Image (cartoon, rainbow, N blue to C red; front, side, top):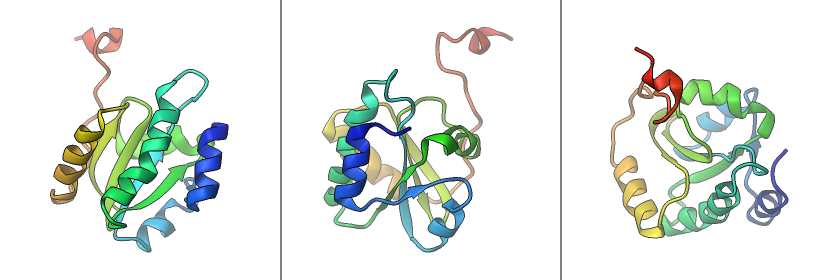
Length: 141
């Protein structure tokens, strides 16, 4: 379930909500995309912060990026495709190909710089999954 704040932003900004069944069709129809994975808003207070930032980021890039929100029930499945390790995350794609991610909340200036850097890259495969620092599995060798 998405947060009430995110639901209101989706409605106000007319942002599509995607799942694993319709994401590829959406990616085919849009050049540069920002997929928002909110995570569990009850546990992650940053989820609503990034939800508020997403439309502002789209406006800052003058409509170059098409936003979409990943449905709560599809987030883990699609996370496996893009291999990021923290929520909330925005995954940037061009022609359906991976460009990069921004995870957690950042300062506004960092969003602008990082998004510009990501959009200037060539598409690649997502980097290998890494466990977050401090996680026991990250320390297992």
